[in-house]
Length: 374
Ligand code: PLP
Image 1 (cartoon, rainbow, N blue to C red):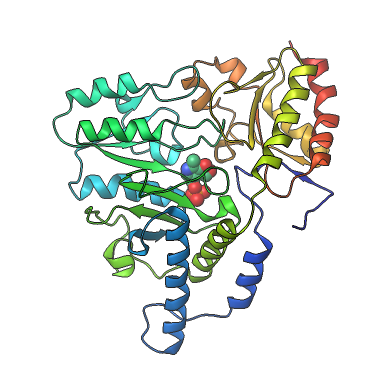
Image 2 (tube, rainbow, N blue to C red):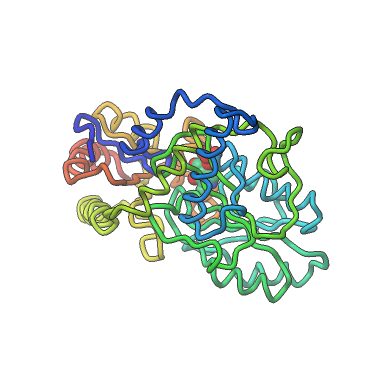
């Protein structure tokens, strides 16, 4: 795969570069202007692009094509899952782990956010304690992998618990494709969120995977698209790119072991050379591409700026919240104090990375942190 050797892009959890095969598919179809709802030939061509992509996304997700509701991305799919299931009467209230993405937490009352342990994983006993007190069916929203730390959540155990209490489970799996296996049906989930730009598609396309037969109220209404579940003319090219990226992931070897090795080499160097450094989630199950590191005394902003000048792209906490100085809610929920949390950075690898990227990072980063760490 081609790579830009001038820049070390180490921010795949924020967004992944568009895959070359996706870029080619987009270029080939950029003039496919038909409206998929039109009955004439251009419309039918656009419809067939959308439906072919739906098949590919469904296969990647381990779901049926009719379970896929295309949205404008992960944020909208999360809103649709939560508000749509509540508004359709499928559940009466929503619980979520305290480390969910803001696009989930925005829909969840503070008192309904479930604590996580020091390892960043949901406290299943606290969850059960709340489930016991609820009379009407509950929706539990739990992410598969955290975007800031890469920490994986105990989805199977949560689904098991949910069954005992008649609860539904929605999983924000935005960070999973191409990094860890996903299978909607065998995981026995009720709803699952995906976003195309996190694995080589375009921004502005995502999906909610919804269990067959579950009622959902559209969050955006005023048109019958997506079988009445999400109104608005489909983003045909974005959806095409989504399907194309899904097909690539299913057909290609994603180099996961190689990516994990790069991440592990980076962490070994960090821990070996900076005794004050702490790798968040080092001892728990997490994505093989993600390194969240805290160096007390060296603010994330300083680290980011220094690395940007050295042509290395990383994030402070989550990219969605970078640019704001507030410490990450994920790290705070894990019991990390706010002073330390403001010194956290996230390095996330992907298919385009090579050893040179680790070297470039270390070359720029080590002199900074070794001189300032406290
Ligand atoms: N959920 C998670 C875990 C994410 O990492 C993100 C993006 O950072 C989103 C949801 C939002 O997805 P989108 O950018 O497609 O709106």
